[in-house]
Length: 220
Image (tube, rainbow, N blue to C red; front, top):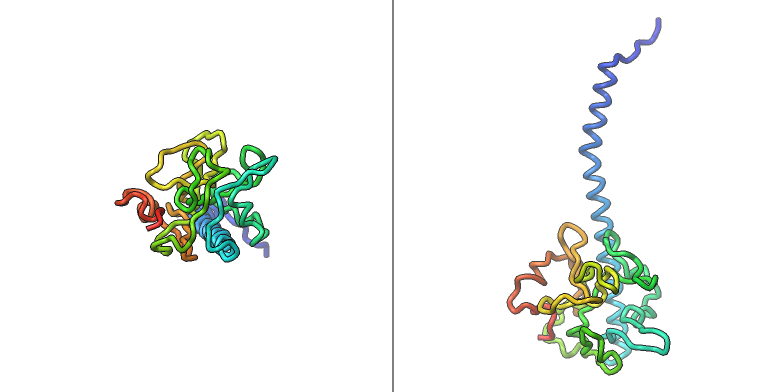
């Protein structure tokens, strides 16, 4: 006795069921993948923040400088703390739309440093030779002071690139080479605080529409 073959209608039903299942499952898989990237982003940022804390232990509790010049280049805060982790991959946030390299071709960062408050650097970097970093003991509330945030350029098409490794506080004006927090997953930016904890927050929870505007960025 010969085996019964599928009819055209049965095949179409099976195909329709597979298409429905795919439509249901693909968004779930995409969300799970996004959540995994967000978790890795938060982990990378926390490791970068802990490198800053290790740096403080060796330098009288002071935060790293925004940058300092050498004969051939500028050493940025990322490079200053890199010896404490020796892993430049933690500079990146999986899921960020920011390029992994800056306009010079060097690996950049998807995280920005609150250096207008945690150092005395000016936005035009005119005092890069003389600026100083503040001491962690100067912070009135470390648990409410932003150190790092996932970030992107505050100006689209900035000549420095699309990264925001130099993070503007809410009250500052957009300017080339400076960034603002970048919500990388579920409208939330990853934030590292001066007391050592990391958290994902919506902009309205720490950056926009607050009074005073810089309440999570200043030293009070």
